[in-house]
Length: 318
Image 1 (cartoon, one colour):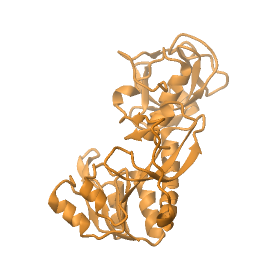
Image 2 (image 1 turned 90 degrees about the vertical axis):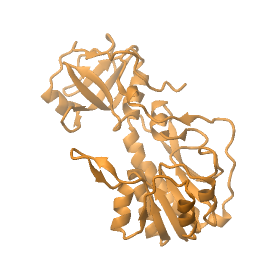
Image 3 (image 1 turned 60 degrees about the horizontal axis):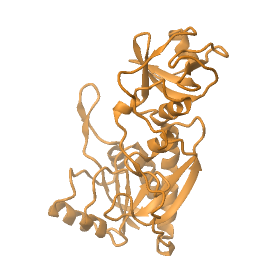
């Protein structure tokens, strides 16, 4: 098929690769414009732009698709279908209607649950036991279109958003190739009205850990915000990112470091129960497992992670 690809971040790159490897003709790649990054704040191309250029594909990065000129240029590509995954711009109706078979979106949830911007984060933070990917026929509403194909995957008890991000990206790549192979035979299924919920964009204000919350909620917050933006807490006057966790054992005052059950184990008491912190990152350093972290910053039982000012955000599955 003649395909227009629309995507921007790392999540989208395996999908582009899969389309090329499957022999589809990629007429153009649309992505967000380069933005300042790094210490020098020089414009840096997005992951999709970098990959498309390496593949020798034409790249376009308009700041909007609302103008008649941009819509005419899009239509002039005469694509059979557009494949959209984490693109980052709203598609006007003229864009949705331009390809002969419309626009297909790869969405990282089992719709209608977690429509919106941050479905992977929200699934982990809510304590969902499974998630997945859907191939959806796009329409004007936010992730409301009929679903052509879906595939589920369990969320493991120690999995982070980063872990799921990579797996769902690969699943989406496989699923879109399957969908395009038998597109005319697929029966779109209207999304049910029951079970609709929205995955709001993650705010950095949600990242401060409130140790007075139950251990289950703290564990989900840590895993759901890893690697970005990264849940954080303060210990010995230093702000530390908490990037991995699981449920622990023991009781104590919220934020209290408990007596370790084994060398290199870091367990912290919560409002009810405790969490075991498995991966951390100090400012200016790389991420470390708990044992390595404790060698650089020994924490005796009774040390306290400080409570943040104000209430920390997070999902309790409500």
